[in-house]
Length: 253
Image (cartoon, rainbow, N blue to C red; front, side, top):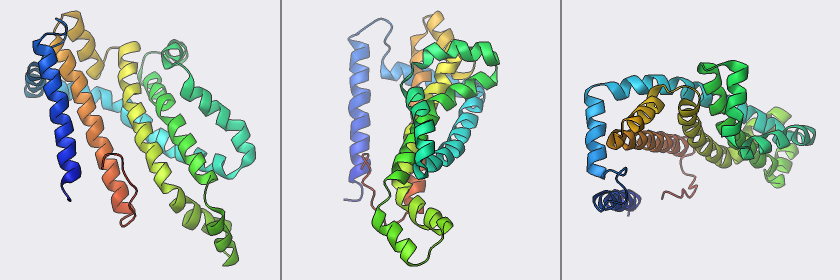
């Protein structure tokens, strides 16, 4: 049964793409192309290199924002989880960031930081960091007291407790927060290109829509989804490698 998860994933993709093809052939809308037309448009963009040029622009704010969100998010989450005072001070900020409508904040970011890379990085961070911080803080806060007591009984220092007890125990939720945060970061990167300046993949989507080239528009969107899925699977495999032997019960399995 080792190949069962892979089989189910392929079956799910086949059902989805089949439904897409059928909906495009009915058609549901004149602006909804078939799956095969979208794949053909994606192949054309790969052959002429336009997709790689677009992603060279899109990945700049995405990678920078995700890296900042990961490092600061985990550090702040651990800090908030360990200190009740910092929990009271900072948790409400990230709760508000997570629930606030991002589209309403983008004009404020543009006014403050212009239409360049800085604003786009901020959009990615606003999308990704709250999820990472809150998941990490919750995981650290709910570390079982019995293993903390065991550490203290063996004369473990606070550093020992943090790095040998709390962080390993919290790692499943921390990685779950990373996966959710990176997914949100992809959304933020594309949203910033659509709302701030049309560059990268956002430019392909905007331009294709303006000239009614809907297969190219859907192909660009599809490429984002594929890249996000590949990246999240890579992160999942990294977690499994780091914590080998610990079955974490992935939803995808």
